[in-house]
Image 1: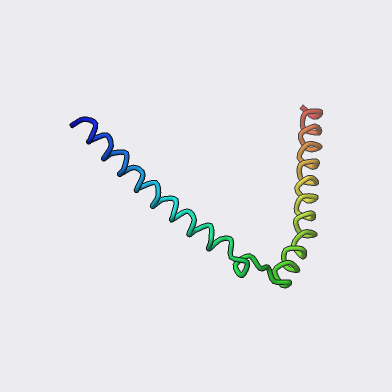
Image 2 (image 1 turned 90 degrees about the horizontal axis):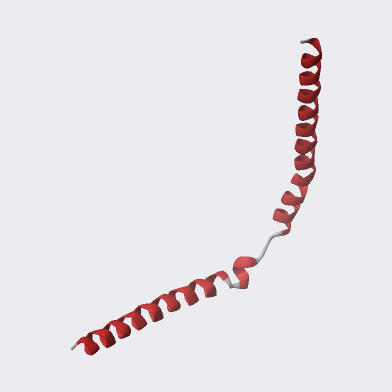
Length: 79
């Protein structure tokens, strides 16, 4: 009796695993579709156009950090 229950459990687990594998394969097929992976030139241009802005923001952030450091040093000298 115990052996039959274990075999039934194993078969049930195998069916569940096969179902999950099938679902994963379906997702992989949809994601792997070349039509969904195409990138338009407009998107590439938009992303490339943002690069100088990002660099500017980073430079401004570094400038603010430097100003804060100088201010802290000056306040420490006065104190």
